[in-house]
Image 1: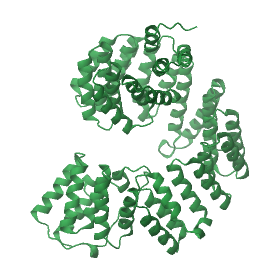
Image 2 (image 1 turned 90 degrees about the vertical axis):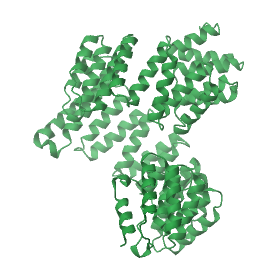
Image 3 (image 1 turned 90 degrees about the horizontal axis):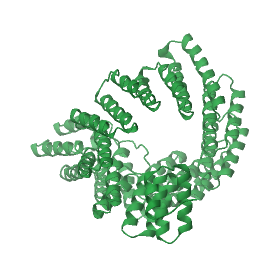
Image 4 (image 1 turned 180 degrees about the vertical axis):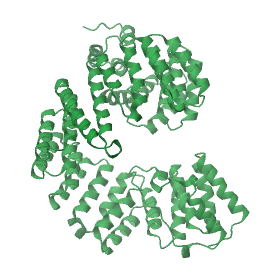
Length: 591
């Protein structure tokens, strides 16, 4: 091995590259792990390590560490062309995709496949990216031939699914996989499972369900197929999907994963008695499965049957305490299970406004990793119970282990003051914490929101921009600043840029959808505003969103709809300031 190859090998295992996988670098929708290619040494070029190559490698490394994927990918691409080393082209591809630059990624992938002609992953990656530009015929044909000639058809189908998952457009990915599947291979259950998953990623729910059912028909006892029939069927006909899953559970009583998934989905659909029936059938078959006690308690909690839930949790704690006494803590998860049960009892007590019981359960938690969290939570509950002095004393006695815990204590202390109406004291706490921990975005964010409440808009803007600089991938600061500009009807161009960035990061976040809708209303696009606000209200039926949605309805002349939405919100939150201000502005008196 020459000096250049030795350096490259060292770099591949250096901390700078630790944890870096192709899937992580690409940030593609499928998010499936992809094996890194390791080429045989005989396939590597013999290139001497010059000062220029060393310098460029180091420049690319530094760019990666700084998050400058554009510079890193361009440098690696130029290195691959100068050295003919496919590993540089592979890195150029990875960081081009991290930079979301499809054209550069395609150039890098083609370079990689040229430099490593015997590497099927390199060729498949190039074809997958080319297919993303609309040229799908080449990839579909290559995958078809690959599956047809493979001895292990099932493995070939799985590999094909992994390859198309690299495509940027999941709809094209499904079309390619569908075209690549030979007729004789379609008799395999795995083929229908792969098509079901690809169709689901392409948001083709009905086709995903059809393929999942075909897989189950080919392999009647397949738990994986039954799970997909349930999950994908919920989007088509929820009751039918749940009933089918219940029938499968009855026929195949040992399908534990399907049973647990079914329980969760029944609870999501508020079919609590059906969920309990599934749990009890599992308990009859496995009376020693004490985890099912906890599951039963969770179902009763969701159904707000708190008496039954508490009794089950107490029984679960008793069983786990016996396990703990009979087995050393290090060899058992009993202590963790007991702590989980006590936290569940805390949740129930809070829902019943029984703060004394909640605090008592927190005090009983012994799990070392939860003690800090439990103590902080105790302070919050003490404040809610009206004992501000005790809450502050509890926070004073916490011994913090690091800067993160210091920040949590400061944020909690400020929350306690804010909830008591002492905004100025909360601001003082966070200002002091921000001076002591100047690079903590959570402190700056909460402090900025308090400044906005005080009307200190310049300070609010300054801190929110600092948060964005510290956490450019966090949607909250973009949303908060963009919404504030829209709400104040100023800097609307900047508001648009901020909200577009927030929406790109979290496209289904109901708070962001509300902000975007409110911005669109401000710029006069009432129809688009209505669509975003409706989507937000479906997920987040809160008074602030209702106030905005009702105002857009009113402005479009749909006053009955506006009154209906406002009435719903008023019944839930009659003291909401945004709603009350909106009603006052339109001189509306609700019945």
